[in-house]
Length: 151
Image 1 (cartoon, rainbow, N blue to C red):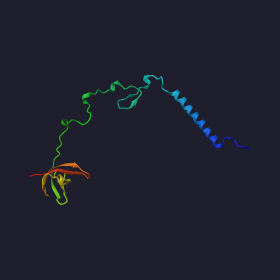
Image 2 (image 1 turned 180 degrees about the horizontal axis):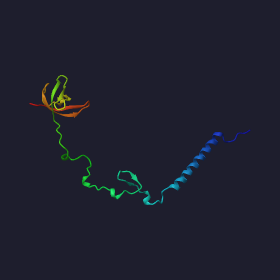
Image 3 (image 1 turned 90 degrees about the vertical axis):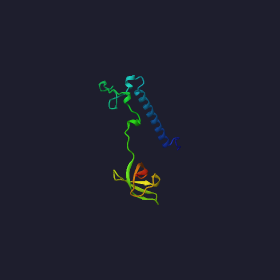
Image 4 (image 1 turned 45 degrees about the horizontal axis):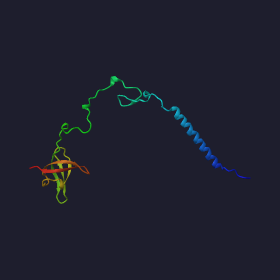
């Protein structure tokens, strides 16, 4: 007996290929039938309602809000519009080690302790000195900088 030229595996592959071609052709036909070519311009429009949602119906003109172009602010407010915040604080040096080069300042208003490095000192300071300083964000929290001794 002679074997046929095609094995079972080859026949299965051919069936799968034919099935895929038919499915592809069917999808192509469905796309052609459902395409919007030739649709009117009004059918393609989408509107935005007063809440910012997309709808197919035009918005109600009674709910329209007029906005003046001068009222729209883009970006950071101008410097003269912002309040000036007093950045200088007063406190007392609760601990300072000159050999290690750091210490802590106890704030007079809040009672918080802030780290101060020797590089942040403007005047020579000792423990229990009253100082004026500014705060700066550091790696582990707020640091006191621009530390001046109050005479």
